[in-house]
Amino acid sequence: MRAEHANKIYHQAIVDYHVEDSIDNAPKSPYTGIDGLLYIKAWIDTVQWHLEDIIRSPNLGGDLFITTKRRIDKSNQERTDCVEKLDDHFLSMFAHVKRNPDARMNSETPAWLLDRMSILQLKIYHMREQTERKDVDAAHIDNCKQKLTILLEQEADMCTCLNQLIEDIEQGRRFMKVYRQMKMYNDPKLNPILYGGAKST
Image (cartoon, rainbow, N blue to C red; front, top):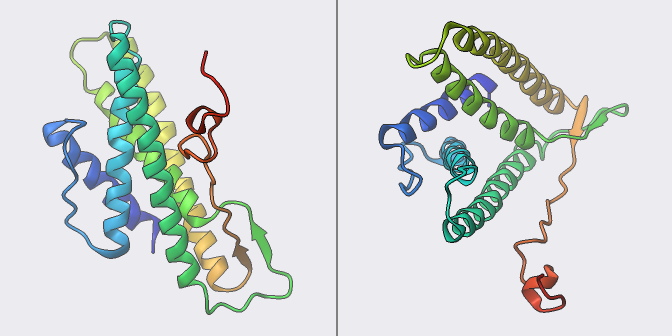
């Protein structure tokens, strides 16, 4: 797993989504295995990006606002599920590694760094769109170009960090420890509003 390879898959998923640009379209991943999971992850993030745009519309009616918010909650859970499947992949991948006596624990797993990289690809894609607009002034374009430059620098830095982290874990210099997210708001057994232990206001 190389960061550059993951970013290539993320970018393809984002481009594929924007062919029809519909939050209701289902992903059709050309990949299988871990690459397929990365593609689905990026698709989920892309749909949620646009749901987050929609919910901020000042003209959004109450019913549509509630429906959109619930879709965002569902999307957040799907995103978390994808990351945890990636965690499982890396746990299996590193199962044979013998830790060095002075190995340090890393607080962020490779999967959660990949999660941040997926979101960053969306920022890059949409910021680049802003630099190509014809309906804004030069100041807007220049401002967005400056932001895009920073995002591209961050992309390179994240690639370096992921590649180094994976190499360090493979060599026993660092190790990962997985803690599941244990989200409570979507769980009918843990959210008091859902299990009836509290009344909504």
